[in-house]
Length: 274
Image 1: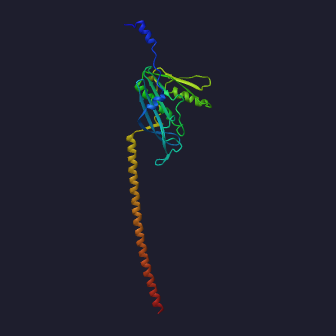
Image 2 (image 1 turned 90 degrees about the vertical axis):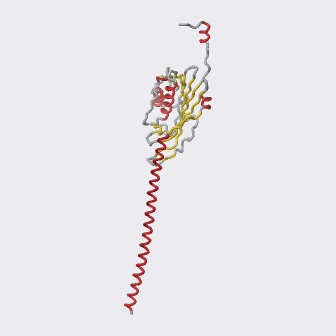
Image 3 (image 1 turned 180 degrees about the horizontal axis):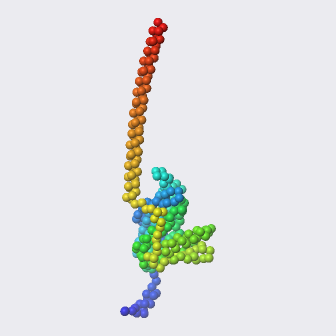
């Protein structure tokens, strides 16, 4: 087997990889590539919103961002309640997760480093896990042999032990190697030697993707039902109008009969008097 000469080996050993590109610069370049309707389950009923995927690629990096925005809650089978207290735009930092691929080092980074920010009324849903799983699935499909660069995060103060365990379970449950970096468990780190060893699993019953075909079919059914109700209402209006005409005729007949009867009584009284 041919071996590298000492000068070449030394030059490769001293070769420095370029610094990774900034996730902010890649986010600024990212363009939307798809938008999907999501239905999220919680105790109060299903919540609906849109998930957008944005993508960017350079000579050194590839970037994918998934972000969600809420729209409405289905109160019952036919009543929608708009979510007035949530941002209806893809606000920066909310309901957002991203992944950055660095080609020279063959590593990937997950973000944001502070964790996925989930606002009410979605904090009791599986939205955070679902967004993260979308990134894992994409990475496993495209870069299975890359490694996950250590990702560190810091937690705000005042978290309970249960909340800290939930954060640890969030990463460990997806197959990451997880460790706390301080005794107070305020900072942590997660990584993985190979992307294909990640799990990438979410509760399929807690989050449902609604395809465009299914959405159009649902709209079509609702439109047909609306036409049916309008037809029934038209029939009721027609029947009501017919009943009103019949009632008016009966009133007219009763008035005529009352007049005839009154005339007859007057005549009888007249002849009785005379």
